[in-house]
Length: 133
Figure 1: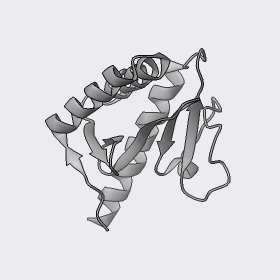
Figure 2: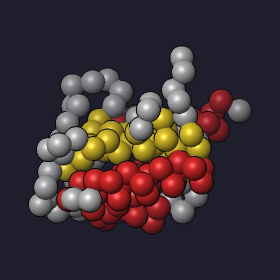
Figure 3: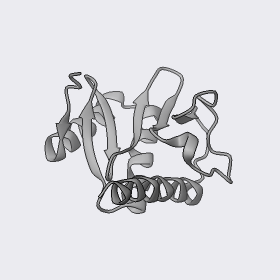
Figure 4: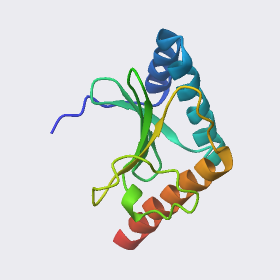
């Protein structure tokens, strides 16, 4: 299955470009969540997949940052396996694997809770990588 994956510096440049192109609350929101992800994991890898979706990875996909007209959606690849004590997940709740956070214009982002969720995703990814070795 082809994913049109672009990694590293080129992916980061494409994400920068997407943020500039949006030039509205969605670009600002994508920029903020990107910053929070990098604060939570300075070693995170930025990728560009599926013909234009920003992806953040560490030992596997952590989350994506999709932008739509009414929402910026962070989809956590293994979100159903993550504890979410702050109840950030508010979308894709019925699935067995993914969970998402829909952020609407003007909504506040709980940065502390989001960092904790990203770090939990890293722990989950790295524990599964370690168990395979």
